[in-house]
Each structure stands twice: as structure tokens, then as C-alpha cells.
Image (cartoon, rainbow, N blue to C red; front, side):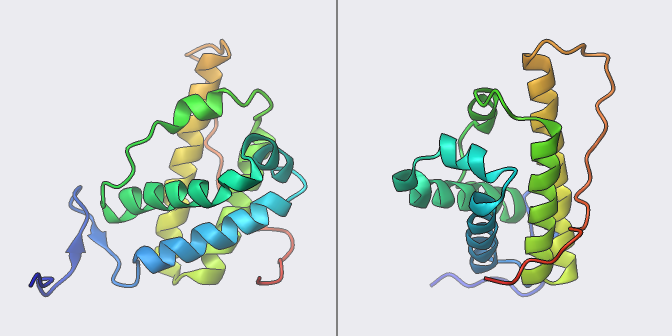
Length: 161
């Protein structure tokens, strides 16, 4: 029988994992966010064109593995998301801004403030990394300064699903 030692859980990087952050929370965030994203007028058409309807359950599991690895240190995600995003020619800053805004709104609705802030921080880093990769792939100057996009609050509130 394996027992969890008392005290805080530590991520492999040494950072403390909030006690109320677990796989179930990640699953709820992924499900709610992507349900919203698929209906969104800005990013929905991109998601719905790139991911076939039949592939969504597998994609959601993959995204949950990504967030589990990132936030809990589970190591379940071993993919390479950059090439997939580089192949989406229409991705622009407007898409990343909307993704971050919807993501922030979702985690603030579902999570404690500490967990929501952790999700948002990591989402901003992921978005910035993808934008840097896209800039380089599209022939942008490596010396161009790419502004970090922040997850702004939504100017409206969506009804909870």
C-alpha cells in the first residue's frame, strides 16, 4: 500500500503544488474551456477545422495530460505541441489573446484564486512560447521584441455550462 507522506506536495521542480489542485480539477478546466473554445466566434473555427469531431475525446485526454504534467509533474504528456501549432497558418495574436481570455475566465470560475493564478501563469508562458515559435517559423527577426500577452479579464461573463 502506497501512502502519501504528510505535508505539501512538491512538483519535480521543487515548487509546492496547491492542495486543491488535482487531476479532477484539471479535467473540469479542460472540459469547460474547450467546450467554450469550440463555440467561440474567434478561436472556435480554428479548433473545429483542425480537430475532427471524432478526435475531440482523445484530444481532451491529451490536453489533460499536458496540464497534469505541467502543473502536477505527472510526466504523462510526452508530445510535441509546437509542430502542430506551426501547421495552423491562420494563428495570429488575436487567437492567442482570445484563448488566454477564455482560459482565464474558465479557471477563475472553477478554481480557487491560487490555482487559477497558477493556471493563468502557465497559460501565458505557453502562449508566449508558441508565439515565439510561430514568429521564428514565419521568418520573423529573432531580434524583434515579442510582447508577452496577458490573460485579460473578459469584458463579458459567460454563463456557466
